[in-house]
Image (cartoon, rainbow, N blue to C red; front, side):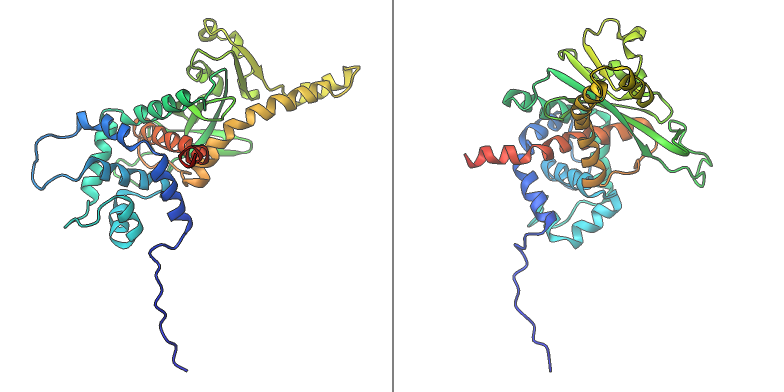
Length: 321
């Protein structure tokens, strides 16, 4: 029996990608971001008419959300109507190629605009009361880098390093973040080589207005470090498991140290949420570029977008009201 074709309208099918883009369309402060870029955009045309800044910014964010390289992004714009629709490229006689996408990213990197994206997002959240800034949780995560030497220089990235975690060696960089202890939103991002100890970056992860700071056992001894003497906060650092077990045996009330550690861990766990978003939701498991500077600009953008993603439902509820 011959199968007949069905006339299906797939343009408005509610897929997970469409749902994500519909939500981010409404929560990203496009006008504020474009205003940050406009003073640095080229004013003289060197050939063909340049693409609108907002269209290029939307393409740049598509790369972050779906882990696309410049080449993959160019090809996907031709293949996926949903992406062209989101980038507002309908009706144009041509689409941005990999060179245009690369140049726009270099423009953002040159003027360090990714940092301003994060500052802009957090300023709006603070004004709306989403970030209380009374406490900070700090932590770090490893991001892998290619360890192969099969490249033009015949060497690994000199700004990356290897470190041992458990019984395994890892090569790459380390991303340190400070998050608001109440909301879990990222306010500070620092990037180092993978072998840099977490405690050495603690002073750079506090914004100065908080009263309490929470960290895991990797931050033991932070209060005694020279660079922390002018930072007036109360540190709540996780106790090492062996010491906690010993105290439990000697405590008349029993299990009191364990309960205290559980309370601290409950607050400290919020720092893991942004890491989950950029690694699992956005798929950023490996560095994309050589050197810390370029990768740091991408991480600043990713965490600005992760902050928006984490509070998107709260923002959308305000639109409904």
